Length: 356
Image 1 (tube, one colour):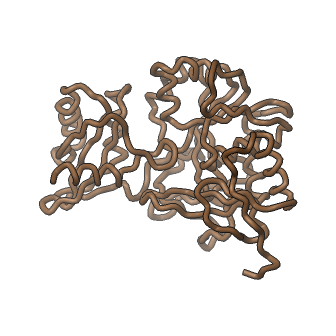
Image 2 (cartoon, helix red, strand yellow; image 1 turned 180 degrees about the vertical axis):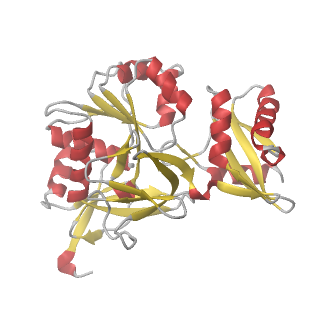
């Protein structure tokens, strides 16, 4: 990389105020100052067209750095605000850590509206009213199961973006009944965050499905230096389908395991369980096995003793004997990657250790 085409990276300082962060971000977006680093960035220099550097954790839990241009970030923010019919002067709240692309999105959307986001991470007292916010499904679950302060905040917003992990239809229905105006989002760091809202691509974004069933995305929101296909699409690792122009995300392409010669979709297993056990936190995952190749295990948080028997019966009836979990694990919390995504690799490690 030519020294003249390089730009310094300034990691976000945890001591910075929201005003300082917004001022630095505004400068980064107009190339007046260093690029901003969010998360555990290690690079000290990037391409000159990089405005923001974020870290992303894949399914392996390994960090990778994603370079985002001002054009991509602003295209994302403008399209999101347009979809929501957000007006200049309206406010966003920030309930997500600044290590995540979804938090960066809130900052840039706020800049576009001429306001500062209301920073509510570790906030003490009742949350103030805002027009919009963004959360992960775990936060929505908490709001509907005892966190009255957060529930009231979400109910008062014009729209609540929910992304970062799959949102079950049951949780969505609960939120709707509770008066929360949920907008489901799909995207990733490589697409400047959420770029599909309620199954509909944002303005300028194109979504297609590969012959093998994977979601691919094109448009002005893409990160710098991605590997694109011949049609300039970024091919994700998620499976999906388009129904009447609406995107339905089916789960990660690597969530299918083979146990005893039978294919089992972990996302389908979780979806089936969630339809009956609405108020439980759980995850399906695989453990290597000499006998089966891969074993299906289920981890659950603070479930009653009858949970295992009932789930076994449910899965066998729906998918056959191959879908009977080999073991259940009672935990006090599920390990997460990033925000809201269950770390299946960590669960497999815990299961393996407990067997020795």
